[in-house]
Image (tube, rainbow, N blue to C red; front, side, top):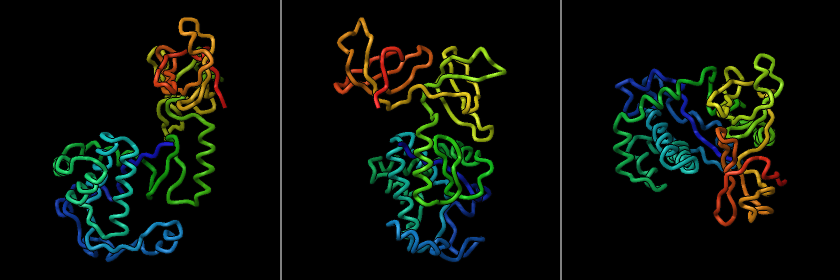
Length: 284
């Protein structure tokens, strides 16, 4: 399971306000006079989370979101998740002002070059990109807001059991990277029986974007898609003639190439092979 953090702005009008670029003292310019999250101290503590910190100055959140964008692009989702945890702790537990200098220090703690990140945050690089991303989620009125496999789940934190059930359910449905079989289309019956690769989910239309071997991308309802294979599935190879030594070996599906109709299968020894579905069976 991968966790990614996306930007969202509750007060977008503040992002470019020249009087708020260096933060706003608590209790001024319409900001709360103190740590508004203290109502959740006891509840958070029951889950091992410290939210007892104070606040002297509220930051311009665009800096934090740009750092998270940088971390995802340059370090991957695990590094981004680590950075997000440090941001959360700094703000809610330690009363650390989330300006460029402190954010760059956190970036250095996870392996990035502190000076390069500081220069990035003080520049305008990716500023408009992150703003567009954060303003693209229509209908969201509060954060955190959770998506699982691209589909909206809930606004605000829920009990752990809610997420456990949602993750188990999502594991049985399509998600990006899956190979799917198209069925039951009435308006485009020529696509029935064809295979594609799931790309992204459009929450507004409640449809998956599916890529096909001829380069087409079609928006399709989940009920018209049956998952055939998914990245991470364990498989056993069979029926190969030119590489018969692989028959009987176990591997893991890595990525589906929709243009060739083949999966990249990785083996324990490090070898990788491009195989069609008929040359492997799924192993539970």
